[in-house]
Image (cartoon, rainbow, N blue to C red; front, side, top):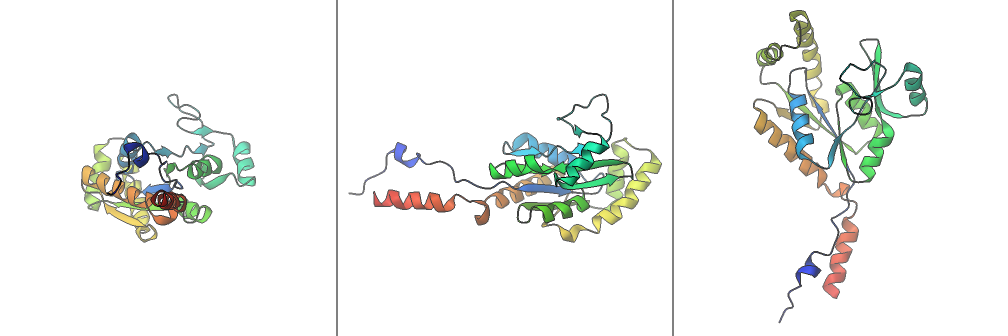
Length: 225
């Protein structure tokens, strides 16, 4: 008669250890990146947001270490000098923004995933800094007319600013082919489901699961016992 393992023997192993990943979701302004990112962070315990360093002054409702790490230009340049950023840029020729290296690398080593709020240029830098650890998703709008409608609907910008964002959108969309995945963001729930499916698939890639060899060895020992 074949012995049926007891429940204790069935469940005494630790989960397979894996290396975390960097997730980048890019889209033109109004493309829905913010809503998708917030939904992922609310429902994925192993996912955290990379908090950027910036030289701009905090707004009244912003807290250091929560919304940004607020640093002066000298401190920012000092981080550049010691390779402290995974990616960084000067925005509108004034303020600087960058993704700090140390917390992201610590998260990856611990098997946690990090999502980055960066554009296609930052995505390029991030891939160069962490080859093999970055998954990029580009969200396409269903049409340019719909993209413009969404910008007007959120009532956050003047007509002149919306026109500028629409001009910039054409350039941003032209970089879709640099990303690992492209998702058409027509409706929120189906888009979120596709993005989550990509995240799950990326987590289970063989090369990310660095503990598989040890896990399989334990299975073999159990078989021989």
